[in-house]
Amino acid sequence: MMNFCSLAVVFVLFSSEESTSTAFTTSRQNLPSAWTPSTSTSLFESDNPFQSLFGNVASKISNLQQEGMMNSVSQDQLAQLTSQTETILASEHLNLSLVRSSLESKQTAEERKFRSNLQKGYGTASPLHKLRLFDESNKEEDVRVTLYRDSASWCPYCQKVWLTLEQKRIPYRVEKINMRCYGDKPASFQRLQPSGAIPVAIIDGVTYNQSNDIMYALEEKFPNNNPLVPTGPDVRMSAQSLLRLERQLFSAWMYWLTSRDTPDGRMRNDFISTLTEVENALTASRGGFFLGEDVSIVDAMFAPFLERMCASLLSFKGFQIRVANGEKTNFPAVNRWFDSMETLESYQLTKSDYYTHCWDLPPQLGGCRVEDGSKPFQDAINGLNGSWDLPLAPDNNGLEPDWSWAGDESAAKREAVERVTSNFEAIISFASRGAGKSGRSYGAPLSDPNAVPNESIKPFVNAAMIVVCNKLLSETDAENTACDKALAELVSAWKKEGGNSNEVMDKVAMSLSYLRDRVGVPRDMRLPAARQLRAHLNWAITKLQ
Image (cartoon, rainbow, N blue to C red; front, side, top):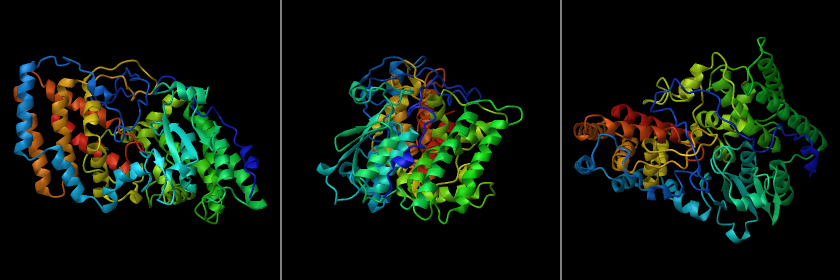
């Protein structure tokens, strides 16, 4: 087997593993006020503020009793409204227990085992796994690897290590650490990694604190687990050349993304020229991957950044790389390579969506520069102009290919409901921050972990979310009509008894918008489920407004 060090010499990083962030530089001034995230964001305590809302988030914020936060509705009116809300839900046979029962009746056998498999470390790969054993042949006491990766599943360097562990099927534990742009790092991690950069891995008791070093160590210490490093002198030379090309592409992308192009389009042309070299290399490959029929370390190195290039250049520059199936493109081989990658469970697990990337990259990089012509694409990615409304257009109208490998529409809806109902109380409390108070700011504009929820609005957010979950599970016209009727009755009651304004409805809408804008992929769920949840939240928001 080839010594990985001969490949590692070409891994010259453009920047540190985790870039220092500054304020997000692009503007969302054209977004509706209920959509626009709070301008003041902060840290709630010191433990993983961006930990998944839909898995194991600590719901400590629900213990922060915040009186008031309602301007025109008295406590007596709130009590009466709460009682009326409960009566309406009961009359329509809507409650959380029935939602969970309905979900279970529709789930496949594998879906029903999801939570128990998470605890055991088995089953289909999920970002919620904190222990990954793959199957019963591996025992927890035999795990030799602990991976420290970012809580929000944003970090590209973490992604390539994560993908490598999954592709090689090496059992591992996960410790989630904040990125600087959305929180503080615990002192215990700072002692382990004084720079604070992630990822870090402990393998057989030895600490590795650079992503490429971790990948090399995994290949060296687990040589029989699906080797990713090529053998043979010719293929080694090809791998070295491709890895140099990956760094060239990264530099061309980063330079263009974070700068305003010259009048003659030099940065754009430099990027296209380098991407064309990648296209040619993939065209010459005798298989779906860079080195042929089998995935290799080269694919693992390219994947995180090519994925982010597709999202960011479309949003900020109006430049499209990935297209929907059957659409024309100047980069067909790159698109075929993505198709091949998406057959791998390891990549399916770690893949994010355009919306998440276009909000997580600017605070990591210190800002991305918007160019003329990009606004229609940015709006579509951000859910404007109907792109997050029901019925959802396939492939977001050709901008972002659907994840057909993730199952059909019904499976996506079930996944969304499962994630919500499994942590329902904490999610209601989280959503109610949208009508509450925020605190100390961090670079990532969608992160405000020190925000205080509006306790007064929780019963109404709770009711709206129960209706949304029922809507997601509805399969017939009659069931959909019943959900429409239930929400209409709630809106009527809240409007009639809510004082001289629409304050209750407005603050429920603010809460649902807050939640919608913070559904992260893959952290919380896969893209098809996220699209369904965002769109069904939009359905409710529209009724409330």
